[in-house]
Image (cartoon, rainbow over all chains, first blue to last red):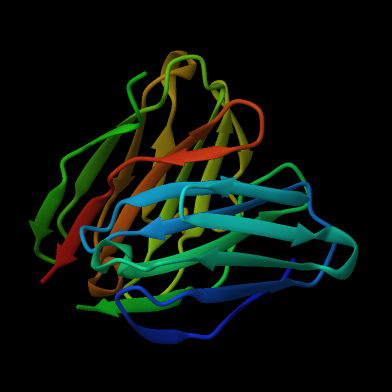
Length: 108
Length: 111
């Protein structure tokens, strides 16, 4: 199946800093989603972005499908941004294949 | 619009006991998924339904896990008998046109 690699695995930021999370995938995709898993375990949809660029407030994402990667940008980070960020892809119309996630801690 | 609902939120059982989880997808979503998330890992698919038919259950341990989606709406996932390694969060998701939405999950602890 399709392989998903996320980097970095762990990230510690001070409040107000910016960061970029990367997702590489091994094949063409029909679907790519970014999620934030909060400390209570809820997976929150951030972006549905199989290609192109989207922005939502302090977050933005870009997927370059031809080069098989996606980037998630977090600007002016806040403590509430802490948690695990997952990239997940699908290339067959079936279930999502998840990466191992990036664990983000934002300190005051 | 209501999200994906799951119950119970937490369950503690002893090994060899049985347990069942319930999921109600977003209204109108034909596709329903059950994922298992072990601590420190990303979710992994157990079973996918399209309406009330199974699309993919290749990763479901069928000797102990079963799932059904009667009438193409609600779904239940059952484990019988449970093993220690089944301790995980069980996530239900639904989709209509590609984008998947997840419920809050059921955290299962097997002692």
